[in-house]
Length: 251
Image 1 (tube, helix red, strand yellow):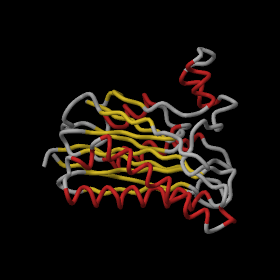
Image 2 (cartoon, one colour):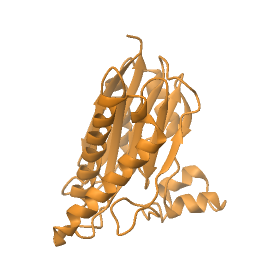
Image 3 (cartoon, helix red, strand yellow):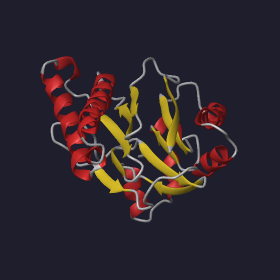
Image 4 (cartoon, one colour):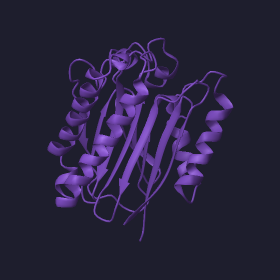
């Protein structure tokens, strides 16, 4: 199997971009990361970039030794922990970014096993036969409202507390990531991953992701269709928006 990938990381209607993405793809294993620096904190674009790049660096080091270990839960936890430690260490040398932090969404796969991890409200989606099979669960007050039955999952997009997070990476204490293993076993041709920040999923609905994946021959075509939906809905000062679309295809 081979993975084809398309990405974008765009500033939207903001003055600067606090989102960041990174990926590492080879014949043995692949890693995809999306981060969103918290907009209320100066320097969070530094936190998001540090987080993503350190995760990719750690993944590549382990993958070079053993691609099976590179996707195991223990090592994914270590990627997240090391990224947190590096963000905190960098903040300690620069008071101007002392309050910066970030979300993170991470997917690693070697074809036989796939592991997801996330902190915050950047999301991971997995599709099989263009149907949504897995969606990560936001760490936000709006998600708490969903869990308590106050609102529906779709209501998160317009809920007053949508941007109030309950977990972030790079704060004064480590927030544990939610780490899950794909239950579908080996990935197969026709499977797709989407990793994205809230500036993307707020405007592109899950059923629309399914439709665009179904009607596209490549990840770039699917991502372009999704962006067109987003652009029709955003306001003048919309958030940064970032997404990775990865499709599994035959060699």
